[in-house]
Image 1: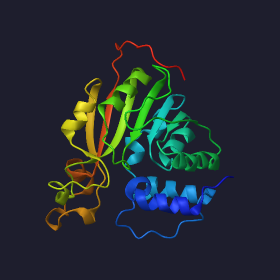
Image 2: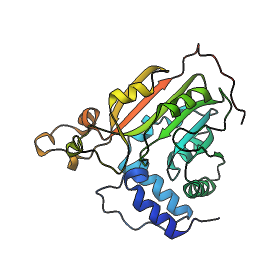
Image 3: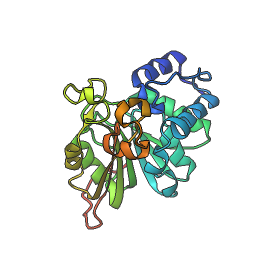
Length: 255
């Protein structure tokens, strides 16, 4: 198996911080050697079974077997692999070629295939035919570029009528109240108003909040169950919406 360099992986993990395993604030045990099957399995377990268990129902891994799913974002591929393991036909788009190679290795480690494509920046066009996707999943948790309207219009084009978009982005107003007046410059953050604007071409829009640790909460409200309080001041904003069934399919590029 072709393994990405340990130095490249470690550098990427340092920069990505909470993205793949939501590790900010945790003292992590040493990982297996980078790029090995055990290393990829360790990442999936930490992400889906420990630090971000809420992702499993939110991202609907088991609901899209046989469907064509786009996974877009700078990740290590844990979520995209899980869709493939559940029977989805995966199309993976990562703006960084090095990260893309790490994700390729992740798919190889579980014996699954995917189509890998690239786009030119956050507003770049996707080399996919119009109406060719059943689901588009966007992970924008490791990006410092704005989550723009152009990208969602491109997703709208690529989705079939009735197709679904799911997006993850850091919430501008969350439990980290110190960032309310001075936003963190590390990752892009959005408000609920901005999220609704992004989805204005879609219908059945739903915006949720998830991901909070009890240690993040002010002491006075730590008695409130985490599953309740994260819906109000959770750190991650979850966007879901559908392309209208009546939407016409514009002429577009063919994959």
